[in-house]
Image 1 (cartoon, rainbow, N blue to C red):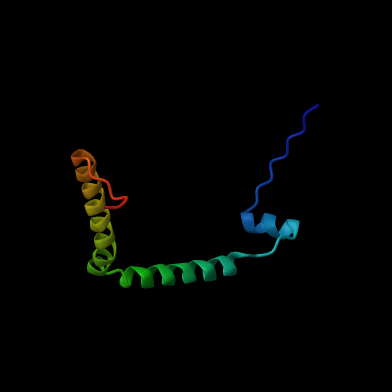
Image 2 (cartoon, rainbow, N blue to C red):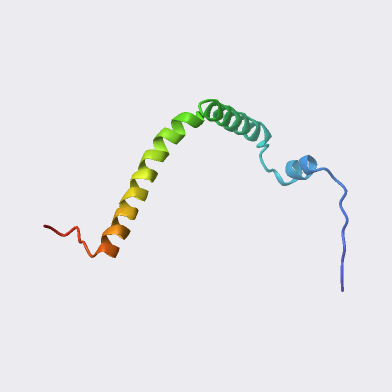
Length: 81
């Protein structure tokens, strides 16, 4: 035996029927806060500052790797003189 019920109601009506809380105001407040924080972070994003922060470390690592390869090819070691 199969029983099929089709209930035509809005999500709000279904939520009220089952006694679920209305979380829409909280969701809107959280989304507003998230949007404000993301906008603030994007405004503070300075490409020149990022490059100064990232590039020296990257270039230093690149120089160290290049020196390691040159020393390995020439037979030198960094373990002491």
